[in-house]
Length: 196
Image (tube, rainbow, N blue to C red; front, side, top):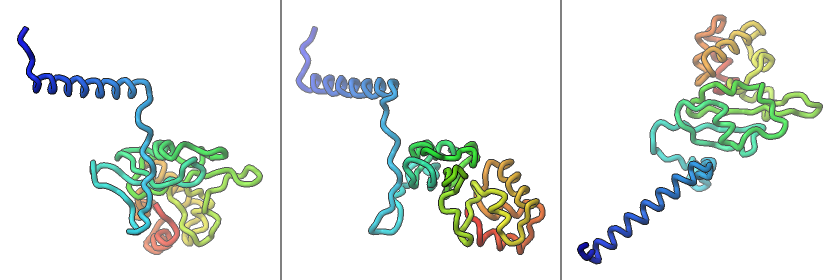
């Protein structure tokens, strides 16, 4: 067998180390010891914006709040669902009312997911929903909340919820223009009182 030169030994050694690292990573991933989920996207204090990179191009960014373990702003792959966002936020907290939201709805970029929790006396309460003049989230609005908007009655509120469930959520308030019974004046009230 011919003698190996010093440079050949270095190359073979580097290849062996690289293979060991790749193998160790593969074994760790199989055992479920993969890297933990990335931390939430944090607001940059000095720039007033978010530290969002443009890599991938197909990711979406959502705000998860309410009865979750780690509320925050998270990056998820396009096509992710509400259940994925809740999982990324550490899962539902004690007292979360998961049946109050559609966990199978597709997420859209910029959407806020509010997980309601049980309030005093065991009644379901949506975090931040106590203000009459505050925006209502389309993702988890109840018929009672929609009924508080000028021009929306119980029948139209039910139509909005049916439309939301049929289409897997709503990405924009403007989509409600397709619901029968909602005219231009009502759309203006909706834009003022609702958020996607």
